Length: 168
Image (cartoon, rainbow, N blue to C red; front, side, top):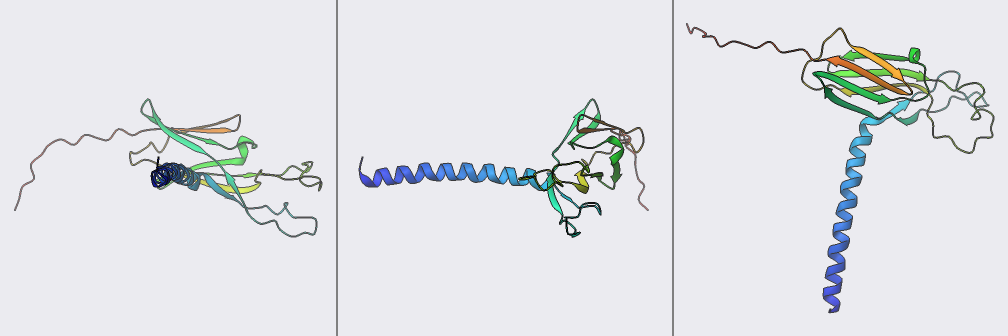
C-alpha cells in the first residue's frame, strides 16, 4: 500500500470509530437528561461548621411500558421507606417526590469517608406520560427492594359514531 492509501484508510477507520462513539455518547446524554435529578439538602445536612451543603445530582432511572392495557412505570429509588415517597399525576406528568435522609450513624458524617456517590435530600422526578389517557383512579403504586412500580389502567376512548352535521 502506498502511504496515501494507508492514511486514507486510517482516516476512514478513525472517522467511523469517532461517529460510533459520538452516537453512543449522544444516546447516553439523552437517557441521562431525564434520569438526572437534583437532591436538595435538608436542614439536618450541614457540614461541621454549620454551613448548608449544596444540592447534589442523583440518578433515578425509569422505564415505562404498556402491559395488558395498562401503563406501568418503574423507577429505581434505593434507600427509602415507602412512606418517604409521594406519587401523583400532574397534567401529563407522573411526579415522584420524596426525601432520602442521611442516617445519623452514616460514615459520611464521621469525617472518615473517602468519597460518597450517594445523593441525599429531597428530590422530584417527572416522567412524561404518553398521549393515551390513563384512569384518574384505581392507580396502584408498590415500592419493593428499591424499585417503585406504578400501574395505571388506560381509559378506553369512546368510539365516535358517524353522523351528519347539517349546514345552515
